Amino acid sequence: MTRRYDELMPKPLPLPFPGVSEMPLVTELRFPESGVTVQGEFELNEFAVLSPENLEFLRLYIKVRGNLKEVERILGVSYPTVRSRFDALLRAIGYEPEERDPRDETLALLERGQISPEEALKRLRK
Image (cartoon, one colour):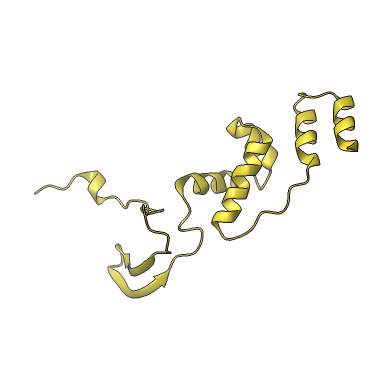
């Protein structure tokens, strides 16, 4: 029987796994080139079990050195959307996002030219 090339390639972890909320436990590590296999019980860290969407967002966030405005530009989405995705990432790794400053949305609208400086000033004074 001939194995296809894609069957030989490592696959990403199938996480999150449907219907299962517990953290997985790894029981074997294999180092193919050296021929070493280690068996035991190993925990995965919080980054290893991120959803593909959160992992991709984290990679981009690191690539742009934590600049959410640059993430906004690259993804072509609004700043509030980027903040929401960042907050979801924080929750996924076990942190509660900081309370948002209600002025952030007004400043983001002003920066994108969606409201005038006068309207922004009016909203910020409330």
